[in-house]
Amino acid sequence: MRSNRVWCLALLGLFLVSSPVPDAAAQQGATAPAPNPMTVIRQMCDYLKSLTQFSFRAEVTNDQVYHAGKKLQYGLDIETFVKRPDRLRINAEGDMVNKQFFFNGKTITLYDKTDKVYGSMEVPPSIEEALDKAHKDFGLKVALADLASPLLWEHVSKRFEHSLYVGLHKVRGLSCHHLAFDREDVEFQAWVDTGDKPLPRKIVFTLKKMEGSPQWTAYLSDWNTSVMLEDGLFNFVVPPGVKKIKFVPMQPTPDTGKEKGGKP
Image (cartoon, rainbow, N blue to C red; front, side, top):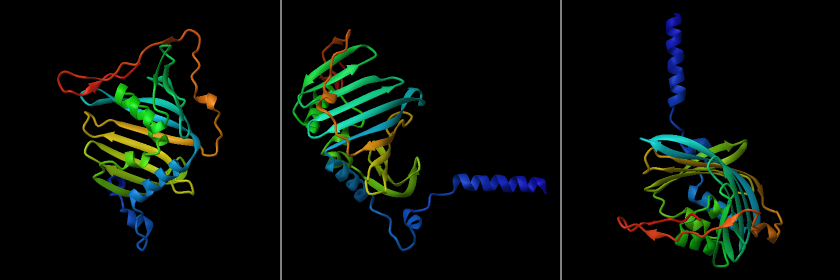
């Protein structure tokens, strides 16, 4: 009898682990259709676009593939400050990164606190145009900077082949719409607050075509949508002993024509 009971418990455990995810309509109730995931993500983008100033924190984990699909996970803490239309600052500190990003409406400055160097470039006087130039000319990508872009919806919705409303799930105690999107190279999941402020609370990217399918995950918290930010916050002041160096322009590689470079 004891042996039979052990087998029953084992089968029950297997059932609990492998039970299929119920469809969104069933989670919402038989008579309530699931929300359209594109509508929910559009509401999030529109809300962020409506904010003149805001700040938030993010706790990021980033997979790095190091051998035959094996992965290591690194951590990163990010502070972001946005003052539209022409101010952005991001502080990033973690296992592999200790940098600050400044945009003051005229120049972008990237400061590497570990190596004690910084680089600056002149850019157009808007967040979207400044980020676009920094990426195209120097390959500079800044984590979560797209949340400050007035074209966030255009960036998020680009080339999605499939979308799914997964259900109502909690992120650190907060009820959120869990959304999933898919395109050829990336799977994207977002958890959007169900309250009167549809803020992103969690984001996951899975790079499907890279070996090991590494993931990039961010938990977003400490949102302040009524903050009043001083312009001085976005100006870089050179600390003692810090050296100025040049950004390396993007150059096409001989073999593929793809561009590389970009770090100061």
